[in-house]
Image (tube, rainbow, N blue to C red; front, side, top):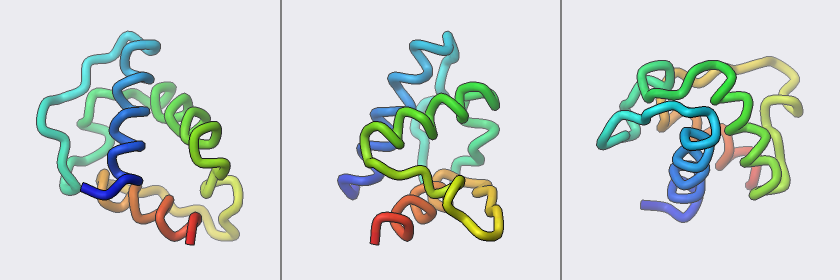
Length: 83
């Protein structure tokens, strides 16, 4: 597992506690984000948390908004923003 993916999963765990959500077990690259256990507020909190951790919010910097469907796509958005 990449360091970036681990950071994202760790942040998801933190946000789930704060937002009082329960994440599903065994989240993988193919997991549909809306089925992960976080709701839309949880994802907004996740993006804010990741901005603190990684120093970027790729969604606010996009010219054309892309909404990732799976965890793998979500990780790729951050990977591209950091490269």
